Length: 389
Image 1 (cartoon, rainbow, N blue to C red):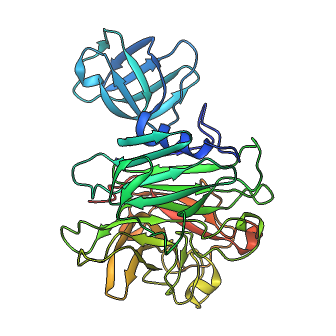
Image 2 (image 1 turned 90 degrees about the horizontal axis):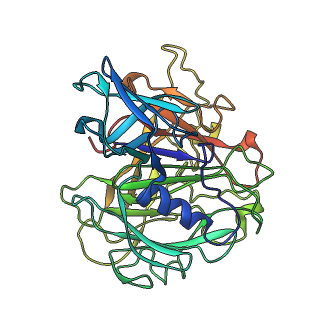
């Protein structure tokens, strides 16, 4: 199941240049869930359940709600929302008899099913909780204002102690920088978080002058090329140094950027299972030059959008590789070789075509935080298909 959160949701948490802002967002939407409260009524008619609330709710169409306390029990659990109104929502209830539910029914915006291992003041250590995951841990130090420091670990014993760091202290002392804001203030910045139970992708537009595009970072488990790859976790950082939030410099560390030069995407070990953290390259099947997805230099062919022959948007997965070759793919992330210009804005929902038929893609504009929109690219995240199917 894919979980999709952003700053435009009802009662969404605010991302700002204040300590703890990013930590709170990641903890809430990956671990806790949000907007928990009582359901006034819950009724079923012809396979559709309608929940009503006394005064609003935290949901929008396509969100995942978690219900509990209802009889019949088929109304409990995770439910994708079909439609919303001011004080009501609907979801599919196949096989549930028509009528009103009983019990003390509650609901909340469901979290992605992660676990908080350890916590400190504006610091947290999070990991996917499913048994299939590698078990690697993300440590977020959000004690300062405009950026948070992030490090992946193979394991941790407390909020400040871990083994198998990626990146290592020698590679990037103190960890990578995930962006929050170009100003140390409480002013809100746009953000989006898309996750499954083994990976999380975070998009932030930190520069108030250019709020339409930002950087895509992430943590979790790759889609590995090696069966049983126990070290196929990844940490992708938006910034390799502080202070670049207000410059027009190209930020190669974004997941929307492909390059044959290793950048800020780290895995804990090589596929052999020995050694320490490795910096990986980010490439797709279409890119021919180091560039953002969807820009003219990405493919060097000036490929038009939409494609003339079939009116399509062409997409390819984002592969990671090192000196040994291909290691795997970043889950959910897709690049385009076509010159997209300003065809999409961040948040557009794009129907998939060709091999992506039936999917809904989330468009996110990506680029250097201090650069004009005309120089930005566009990356796509699959919102509907199982990333690991």
